[in-house]
Image (cartoon, rainbow, N blue to C red):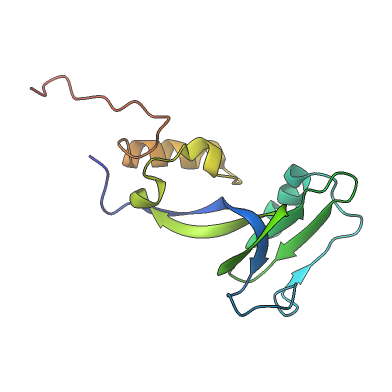
Length: 141
């Protein structure tokens, strides 16, 4: 059974779109809470690596347009995703087992210590992640 008391904070791919503080945030940079490094990291992975190296980073927004990358580093909680096919928002989110129901947890998580966090998640939520094959105890009938 999944552990009903399990929760953790992960950097998760929130989807295609720009990070926003809330649905009312029309500022484009979280009212000054996000900054663009110079030079711009050319890949999402490098943008995330920069984010993970900063203790205050709560999210990374990356424009995936070929030949025109853009990375934004956030220091406030992302509360909304504004749809846009050329951007991806990876943000910290506190979740429990129910968040991952029917999802491939390995593909969802981008994090500093991803191996250790995935091991805890797979152990605590064996019936949740689609890539984990649940096993019954030997004495189960």
